[in-house]
Amino acid sequence: MTTAAAASPPPNRTATTENFPVGSWLLPAPLRPTVAVFYRLARAADDIADSATLDAETKTARLKAIDAALVSGAAEGDAPELAYALDLKRHFEERGLSVEHSRHLLQAFMADAVNRPCRSWSDLLAYCRYSANPVGRFLLELHGESRDTWPASDALCTSLQILNHLQDCKDDYAKLTRLYVPLDWLTQAGLTPRALLAAAATPPLRAVLDRVLDGVDQLNQRAAALPRGVANRGLRMESAVIVSVAQRLAAKLRRGDPIAGRVALSKWEKAGALIVGVARGLRR
Image (cartoon, rainbow, N blue to C red; front, top):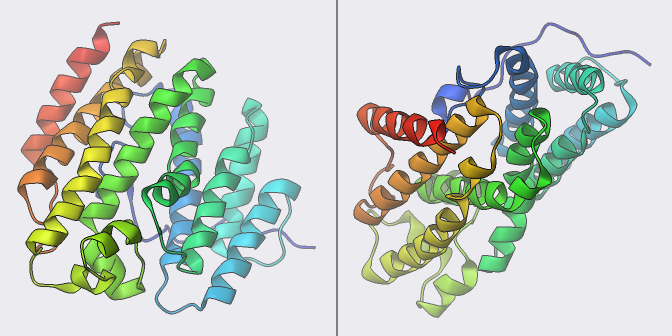
């Protein structure tokens, strides 16, 4: 049995392309390397699941190999993602952390690999339970925070994931035939998923998107309690920044049309969220 090569290229996505700061300066410096290796593996696995050139069987096999490496600490072959998995396991063992958060992410990526559609709002929430919520739980565990913070963190992570799905809903369906807008809501509006391929959102589709945003607003209301429950000041400020980002992005998606073009916060809007979030995070 051989171990994966240590040197490998970075994944396609980077922290700068996300809606939230990844391992930012707000977090304690000693913890940032562990955040970085967690994120790196997640991005590499996501790239596999999103590949337009790999078939579902190959994607699933590679994701299962990552999972096996996380569990065993050894890997067959020298694929880059296996090196990331072994590095993450080492970091987690040194800090006494569980690899289950990363393994849960892999379950979501495996669902993506076979293009399992979200048939309902409940389906979407269940998907986010594995695709998003483990990220927040990992950060809280890394900082030694109470599990009492998990419900608000889950709400925030789910909100961010759904907002990202709305931003990319047209491209996701056009490039990967992947559907995260609840299928039953589209059906109730007399639509099929192909409505996402239009030049702009029709009134019925706009109503469906707003219905999704109604659910996001409820999640953001629950997420607003997170910073107050976080003891570590740096993580508290970071969580407050992310709450502010989620609120602002949800409002912007109400005004904008993600079918006509990607709706995202500007550099200045992100800066405003940072300032507001840091100010809120300083208070407890």
